[in-house]
Length: 303
Image (cartoon, rainbow, N blue to C red):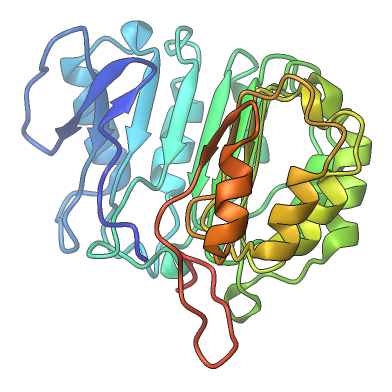
């Protein structure tokens, strides 16, 4: 599977592309800054053009889509431009950096940047979603308002996970991480995520996504033993490699509590265990059964 579609909505509003030369589309939309591969304008120029058409103080959410030569250039022009105008962007609550498809740039090729300066400049930010982990820099940070943190990638370095574990995020309610493949930057193991969850007080989370994982069975077996599991509304292990072992662990867990939904889309679970999971008193999302390739399982998104 590859990422073939752009985000359609953000915080309940439709997302519309904004290119160089475009005019404002109205107040009830979220803009996605959009550059072609060979766009002549720089990132800072496109951002400045947006602010010349849309009052910065009215922008509550912003999506940064494809940028020119994303396989070679970080979104520094956008991030620095936002920081420079931070006093005017007092309403900004949600930011998604890297909303691009495989046709724009494969997820593992997207060059990212350093996010601590941005987080420090926007203490009111509530949601940050990042796509791509190449050259992604994140050090431990404190942020009183951040409720949602998501990193989508084909391989998540354990250094990033460690930085999140050491951060102070008292408002965090949704944590979504795509673990990925060790050929594309993943270098963690079960202990990496055990340390993370021990550090961040998972009982306050509403949503936990450990997606696109090559060790989904192992993660599920451990999660199933955790007393705080049932305090989640949603457990998302989709895009990974979960099979019967993980399915059995979740089915037999005494800690599901009042969990509302378990997402296991993209799975290797036999029809027998799929049927058992569907009898649980919560919604279990299962799509078609993936087939092993000569005994090997693969995550949905890697390159």
